[in-house]
Image (cartoon, rainbow, N blue to C red):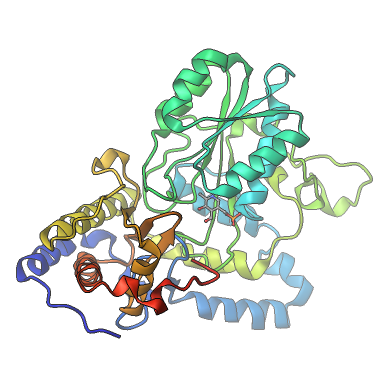
Length: 420
Ligand SMILES: Cc1ncc(COP(=O)(O)O)c(C=O)c1O
């Protein structure tokens, strides 16, 4: 692995100052991070909180191995989906009883879109708006769910939503938008988009995959309706961790889960012939949850204990701001596609380069792990719980060298891997 380039003393000193200023949200010691690695991909797969391995071992050996089926009662397995949902709700600004952890983001989105078309209550209100540049699963799922439920999909960029609502707002049932764009890192205005939808009588489902755990979302404060998000990015729940779904309390009675499985029944062990939904958020459950993943996520969320989301957001903004500043100081002249405005920036920095894939591979070979996003983006995520401003300088210095040496064009860096 190439050694770390010389780091300018002034940047190192500034990094030290900023790390001290944002120490309140520093939980690096709570994570296992391989030596010598600068990990800028916590927005794809979060790092491993140190206590998770022991907790999973305990679940396997004691709760499963010894407790066996009794653990559904004795170890709190049955209610874990809503218990972890309440814990996660704190991070997204949802009061208890509105979030359940279950299934994948894709599956939860399917349930939400079908349910929301049902809640619209009128065949003339069947339009579902979706950002064509969303993470592809959102566009696919909205298309398939709307088709099955008799709706119609309008692909509308976030900037055009207000005009579209003025034109056909009374035909719109639901808007599906990401709070942070997975490619550019742009943060959309959840409060104003939600208010604009409500003005025309529509609901909004927010995809929080790239915002949960790094910024103040305020679902209840902004009277959000519905939301989905995953557990494996900034929430550090592990590969394929279960996802979550939020249904505001005022909508729960009208929320009819199209995957009406026994876990969402009012009396699951009544084994009744007819389905009766559970009275609260439990109705968004379908089948049996994978306990190993769910309990690993529960343990991972403990690293947030005592860390106000406002402090995390301040640290995250400082990290991304400082990284861009370091790029400038080191002479890296690439277009930064992530907004410079704090109010419009999530927790990542994406830069454009025609050989972005090779740039990312060359960085990985140097121990700086980020990712590539089609067609030409180098995407670098800044997980504020475990990254430091010093990491930002190291990453910027490696990027400067990768560009200066032309390493990105080497054949070993341009060959595509399965997961990019
Ligand atoms: C914004 C967004 N939505 C949805 C997904 C997909 O989630 P899942 O694989 O849990 O269905 C991702 C995955 O990266 C994502 O970034």
